[in-house]
Image (tube, rainbow, N blue to C red; front, top):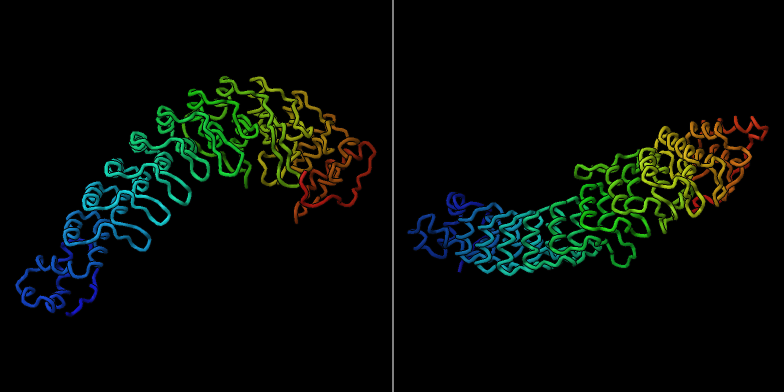
Length: 488
């Protein structure tokens, strides 16, 4: 028997088959059915031709489904095209129909025997694809056909409910919950559907999941890690303040937080991230601002003087934040507005870290990682220093590392702060002593190595020399000592 060669055309629609494909195949078909081929019309020949190369029919079925051609899909299935065959990426006709939200095609393929639990190579099922895209009717059709609502894909361990929640598709979330989707199951990253919704700021979805029984104090628990970031802290971290207020109203613990880092601790870094060129705060969602959520947290019982239980900075001059209060962290970012509000709400402006670093010191710059990137401009730092001093800060306090506020001004390259401290009682006899790295404030301003870079602030050094000269102290500096790259 003569074998057919594969068709040179890959048409999509029925009309195209009639005008192109059939005209290119009659001679081949005639080799097998010479008498019949002469008598059949083009439309009739179409059915005969499709039954010959089965692989072509299946391929064309995927193409018809992808283009949404229901009529061609029906004809191809009737001609024997497989509804289960996948391409080399694991994509089946049912997956294409579900991803495109074509309910009629999904129902056609399911009726023809397509598996509702069909999955791609990494375990992504057709239900997940439909849930992610928000195709409610398709989701319902798949569930009715027996799709497993709790199946996990193998890469991140996520479920259809997680994807729908993250994308904010409330009707799909409700349909999956009604179909007994598990609210407690976690991804490999430790997220539940509620936590995905919180991270993305999907307030209506969060409300629905809480009503369905999700835990308002649910926390991220990555496998193998002890950290557990609660939903409330996650909402604040992403500037979803209105959603955070919603969680508080639902009874979320305002003092919960991994290693004592509560929502109040996190807010200063959200308001002023201090990454790169002092990037702006995240846009977040809702109509509530950061200062208002601070008020609501305190009103709900948040401890305004809570101290971080653990937290050591990274890098040679990074601040050890163990024992840090929300007020101290606001001072660190030069956020005088937040500092004032916290004091009004009962914050103690004098509580130091466990290393003895005071809010005044960190406002001046103690703990600065990179003067070019840390949060707070020079003017903002100066305003925070002035406020901390007004509230009782000691310009001559020395922490356990032997550093003073003036050391901070040298680290942060803020000459106006160095000038202000000197004008308000900072004594050269104290700040010109060596810290635990063997550096005086002048040595830092003149230049110390941070990693491979020599960083210096000539303007700050000039001001410090002026104060040293005024009290008759030497303005010479010893060679740099200390281990480059060490951690405090």
